[in-house]
Image 1 (cartoon, rainbow, N blue to C red):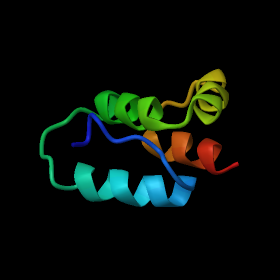
Image 2 (image 1 turned 45 degrees about the vertical axis):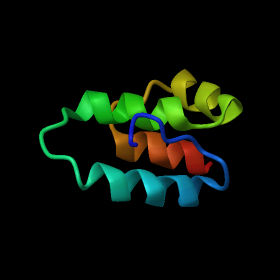
Image 3 (image 1 turned 120 degrees about the vertical axis):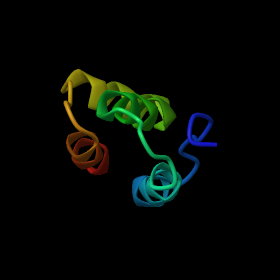
Image 4 (image 1 turned 90 degrees about the horizontal axis):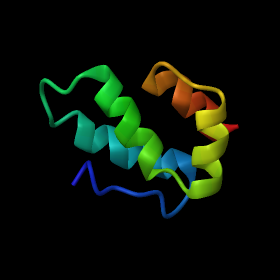
Length: 66
């Protein structure tokens, strides 16, 4: 479910859904979580976030909220 999650509403709503799923999984590496988070964003937000090359999910989240 985490790998298929996509943003259909606001960024905070997507972030909550992402965190709920991610917290149920143990052992995923941070870069993989970052990639999953970014890939689920809407295309326009994804491009803007990727342009800043975030290194963590927290950084990507902050950029997505902007």
